[in-house]
Length: 193
Image 1: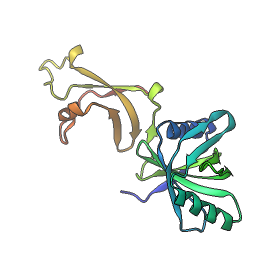
Image 2: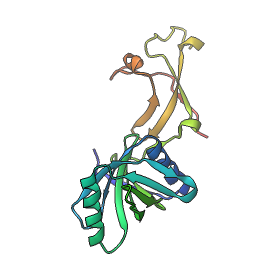
Image 3: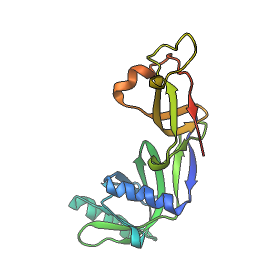
């Protein structure tokens, strides 16, 4: 595995969609202040699209009290955070807008965030609604002697991402026998627009 690299995500629509998904799925988030040792674990609870804000509850009373104490010792309301979405680590810096008595922290939507890339080559991910389809010859069926591939020999899968090292597809767990290590995959067809 290569050394991790960070890539800045600046597209405001993509940044918004990442935090919208994090709130919808109650994704865990870790928050901390620069030059402070304390880490605060919670889950995104709400995304307010119209205001460009997100909310994170500080669940336990002691977590809320500790957060308030640390907040009083810092010079800025800037806070850092990390989350993992679809096996991708994202890091961000934003500002605290409010910490009311109801223990729900309101944060500004950051202008950008950083994606950690663990591989030495860039992966190109595809959104679910616009992902290309890849077709392959069914690895469990023998290739006919005449070389003709029949319609029922072809399988189609949604592409998750493409990289120099390969292609990730959305296949069912029940199909794992088709994709065991060393089994050749024939007649791969992929169209990228």
